[in-house]
Image 1 (spheres, one colour):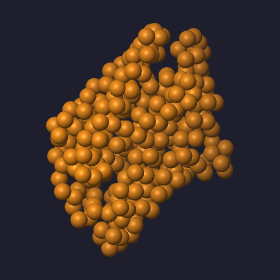
Image 2 (cartoon, one colour):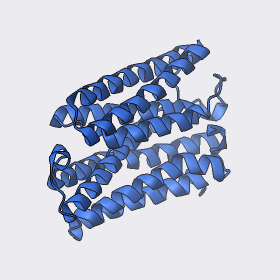
Image 3 (cartoon, helix red, strand yellow):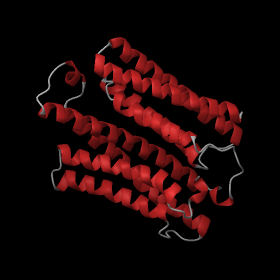
Image 4 (tube, helix red, strand yellow):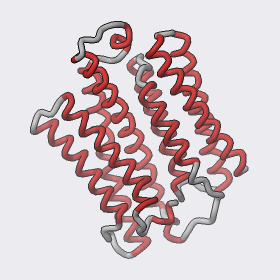
Length: 275
């Protein structure tokens, strides 16, 4: 079963890589067939990603959340789920050229942390941890989409400033729509990001007898939350729009990645088991 689950996730990696190539090719050559192949490969990747999660769940007898590999499968699944929803909702799949490269890179990174199913450590046997991980999947998935949309915004803005016109720029959503979508994604994600910290603190008290210890993971989670709180404050109170707001969205997601991956690898702490 373990080998099968790993093959599913590796297949998702291949599907996301090919979907990235077809999405980018669609933007370059404007061939409708490339766009259709990109969507088909994305859906295939999503299906086998789902099968990998299902297989891991059946093998472990629990929801997969005990280490970075397991959470990574769920993180990428959430990212693709949000992408497919937004693409279908707005009938524009050009976002795939920015989302799928993120998905296949993350899938490759998480695959490198593969480990066989192990019995849960006592500290992980808590429903609070399960809620904590679910809120993380939702928050991080939405923030990954906000990052891709922000990069798309900055790219389109640069083309407009350079006076470029043509089918490529017309294929992309307008700057106003991209700005609004980034804002909606972040507004949707921040409550879950808040719950992520709160449920993590409750679980920490259960596991270690303290709500907060300034562990590197806790500290960087707070930093990430503060960056997005600053974004929301800037939008409402300071009137941030366009490039400044998009830059904060990009910085915020880079902080998300460091909080989840960089801290686990580079900064030892109470969350070191997550490797």
